[in-house]
Image 1: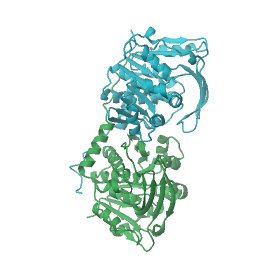
Image 2: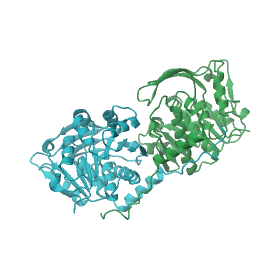
Image 3: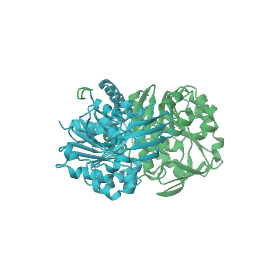
Length: 314
Length: 314
């Protein structure tokens, strides 16, 4: 059976240092985090490239979550390797080293592995590859979502604009939305970016949550507040994975489903950042998910204020 | 009739420059902004001190909103005058000049003007004055809320801790919460600050909204997103004013009322920052308020996700 969500991106090894510890050769990568997160909500296939050094525990972690790894190519070059460090506020990573290695020859044959795709997530990767994946598919997926980063906005703007014209949903962080649009105000930025193609724009604001623009409608979601946060690596990817896993499982992209997807994504990201690498997301029980979704719902709920009948004159 | 909300703080003249314009001798001050905002929700009295230079349009603006100005003393010293400038992102003010002037001799006789107070808001001002106001009242108000700023946390910590032990609600911004508590994580910070006295802690996060801690319960509110924002001066004060005006009018401090108060405060702040000084808050119709409250409610609403029956195994 073809998985309902196909994620194309990176599967990597990470060296990460935060004020709460450090790991070396930890499992990481945009498609890896998104895949683990999405796997709680729908059937997932991951397409990526790794090297002969990629540990079997990486494949096992994905398979344990029911992820189809048939689309992960093992090349002769070493795995993509990222090293980064976070300061005390954990708000942004300082990249120490990026070894692209096998990623330089990544040329996913999506049509060969998954000829028919319902929901496609093009996780953060070269926009030329993202476009090729869409072009290669014999039929357009129901939902195409794309994530990108400052590096591509600065260095491959034309290629990024090309692929943006083909997608339904863009996930992007606040600073990147400003960079891509040239607008400092996020509502103006959203209007400019939607004109580039994506009808749904999800602006990620880290610990402050997300701002969603869907054809003129705005949805504001806070982030689930954590007292203990160890490693923000993968937060955005697991947010997108949870969100799209939920969307794929619901089979629609109406505003109602979209909003609940954002809440699911926020909750998945909160599990991700609570431990290093994917440890916080590997063994979640339905009860643990339910409990956090309930708690988050209680933290964001209120009865609408209806002022007219109780306001003073004037 | 005694107003149900008494606000003690500053009434000032401001010189403000933002990328969208500038004003000189504009109406400002913590009690002024809070008062105008609260006046849409309850009967308000303002206690402050001004100089002979304070323009009659200041008093008229307050009286037009039904605010009782009997507690505003006119001294012989010039009015408190603040000059500040905001950069392109409008996120924080750079203070260019602070002339305390008459504020140095502010000694409000609250018992003489309002011997019985239901809801008391001690807006940003010297914590020694804040404490004296509480001490002077023959009976404790139902609700005492307090706002403060980094200057008092750094320079009058002991006096601030003294008054914090006497209040129900503290409004404070994110950075100040970290400074006051010595904790970088906001949940930890909230626990530390609640142990200092206030059972309800409202952490203001500017354009990101507010995080409310009420005896172990958390409420997360986004801020209303604006495309055009001209002058952030008074945002926090009008937030607190709207919030407390609503609380005072409802007469309670249960969690349900508190949450709706936060929403009201957010909406009032959004009107405040849309124009310079208090211009955006001076002539709001019930319909304009209702429309924005509705819109904000639509922007934050979602149906809870109930995952257990639809999740995949594992």
